[in-house]
Amino acid sequence: VAHTLLNTLPPWVLAFSATHLDVKMLPEPTDTHRCEVRSHMTTGAIEFPYDATEYFASRSASLRQNVNRRTRRAAEDIGQPRLDVLTDEASVDPYMALYAETESRGWKGHASTAVRFDNVQGTFYRELLRRAARVGYARMFVLRFGEVPVAQQIAIAYRGALYLLKTTYDERFKAYAPGVLQRMHVVRWASTQHPRINRLELYGKLSEWQRPFVTSKRKIYHATF
Image (cartoon, rainbow, N blue to C red):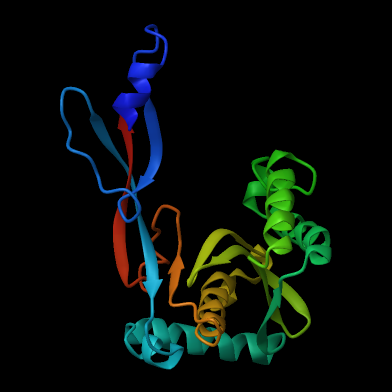
């Protein structure tokens, strides 16, 4: 397809690049004199064809102990961790205002890279979530300790998969590992949904704190023809 496209474009177009390709969706082409393939990153997925209890039983003992310890501490010090899930279009603006406030309070805010309600990133995610909400795909997660919001996760649910797009947490509560607890709660929520969600796609560079959760890894690559 890429070579056909190149042949139909004007002769001064010398190359066509496709970036961030997923080997699950598009198998990696052969690296030849007409096609250069470059590895971009390794991403991960959480697959659970069974329930969340069995999934967590299959994880490392250290992860389970860490989750249980942080949950107890959060419940004792602040309030019982719980997950709110928003799906409707009317919730998008208040949710993104909360997301922006959380992220701006941390290191991304100090580095001027945080999502803000009305900057380019904030505008993009608000429009994305509005469109997704209209067709029933938007999932906006808020982890709370009692009534205190401590982490948020933007996601899209589609055909049995939950695509985890963007996440943030309140760095004031870092000692309680809110990002880890939010991931645990999202997995548990996903395992109870009908129709069933059986895969969570991280679709970002696999980090060390994500590795204990993932059940599979794969390459994201760039290809230039």
